[in-house]
Image 1 (cartoon, helix red, strand yellow):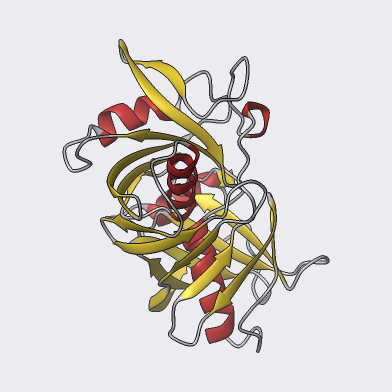
Image 2: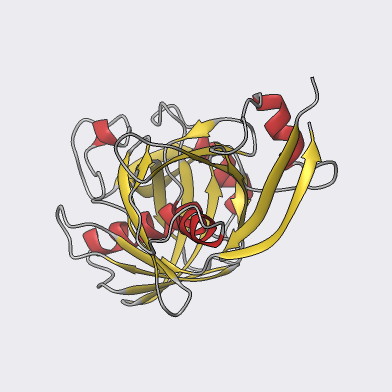
Amino acid sequence: MTMNLHFTKMQGAGNDFIVINGIDQPFQLTAEQIQTLAHRQFGIGFDQLLLVETSKVADFKYRIFNADGSEVAQCGNGARCFVRFVVDQKLSNKHEISVETASGIITPKLENNGLVTVNMGAPRLSPSEVPFIADAAANSYVLEVADQQITISAVSMGNPHAVQIVDDVEIAPVVALGSQIEVHPRFPERVNAGFMQIIDEHHIKLRVFERGSGETLACGTGACAAVVAGIQLGRLQSPVKVSARGGELHIAWQGGNSPVMMTGPAVAVFTGNIEI
């Protein structure tokens, strides 16, 4: 059966998405169909597919599918695009909305300057919550990857991240090493691999090899996780500017159980219809 799917292509700091209104049209795509849509030569091309649905506990429900068709619990850049979408599509007249995700409720807010701020909730640092296999919680861990030992911090922002500090993010082996970290057996649900270069205590450069999507131009939860890791290690102080290849994000965290606040752009690129 052929399905005509209406979508909006969006990007947040270069992390690109298609957003689908699942309230007004049915959504029944298989993983293989999502992979086809995500293909940059034979489909639309995107890092993640974002689905807007109704919720019984919040203003909306937010589902996220990676380019490989797998569903994940959280996406920070996507959350900003989500609120931009529902406001632009007049699905809500509020500029601050509550959004149900698989990892909890978040509250993105469309600012007057066009940027979007998202309360991403408190980071989860205990190994069982990441999840990460370790004997005890620590600010850093040694991981054996590709016949070498690397030092990483394990942080969950609703999805798992392994963050390492590198001298120069531009020459870091993001794809070669990141693809192996992603499937490391100590991360039973796979992991996003972050490569962080510290410029000063309020500024970092970051590249992320995302679980299920490969390297992206920006990763919102990855930026949050990197800043949390840097603050935990005593190398950063809030707020922190995160320079990704696709743009800049601004992250603030006061430590402990306080929420991580992320501010950055969310832009609609074009709308279209595609037959599946």
